[in-house]
Image (tube, rainbow, N blue to C red):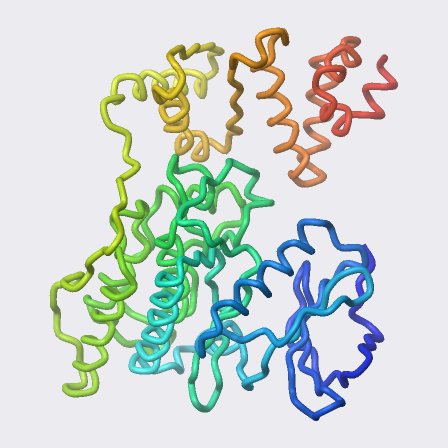
Length: 440
């Protein structure tokens, strides 16, 4: 892809500075020539953006414009620029929270009172999003702006946000998941057998506040799948103190309890409303200002959900799930097994099968599935074809080294039958096209 970062020229605007450079977007601070108003310009870095990137760009403009609230950076317009779009936003002089907390590397410089003030503003933002039925799905320090002097906090980037009350996240490679992997909620990984709703943002906010308080993320891994496993199965380190060297202070137990509540693995174990979270923060901040310390108190006393939400926990299938898990453990030890699940439509076969997501992630495995249905009865082995096409899609998102390793394994396995297999699984040819052609 060709980037359009260097020698940027936008008619009608004078570029002042570059604020952010990411894998997909570039953000500039600029001056509008017509009225000398300072604006922030966000453009796509690819010279030829994909349809998905263009759709996300329009999505963030539409959602933010319809919200029109002070705590959200207001979009001034969406204009065409080269082969894509240019998003114009208000410039209130803020910098990202990511830049703001970089100083934590040399010891904390943000006081506990300031941390609570920032957290309280973020709780109010989530309350507004909850009231407007918006799931942000990408809460992180880079998407939170703070004014260095006034300490006013605003939220940006609604590119992957949703207006649906709940979404079902399909299982994908960690390399192409929506959101930012370091801050993503367990259900956003697609490996929790649960839907994504407004409580997903609570988890991401918990990770953000954890980093703000301690200067580091709760989970740091080199491998993407290992990080996914941490989110869905491991508890973050206890928050006992923050700072480095001689500049350390104890974190009050109530603050630690609030963050652990936000970062609960299951959505029903987190705060059920931003209002309840906000009340606990207000109590902490009041005590700190009045007495200089935060005494222990029971959190979630005002956490009341105003929505009717049915828990997604699986009931009455413990034996069946255990059979699957036992079979998986035997396969991990080296055996090969085939298990078939039968039942009427809607009886819950998929929900049972999806319970094996967690152990598969732990073992760095791939989860694929196929299903025979009434409309594909005339297609031989349709479920197997569906499952293996899904596997090829996951493999194609891996690193070059991993794809090369899969090429070698595929060639060893298929031998001279490669053309027969690629007729029904065309994605296989994308992985080992030249080697398969040579062997055939």
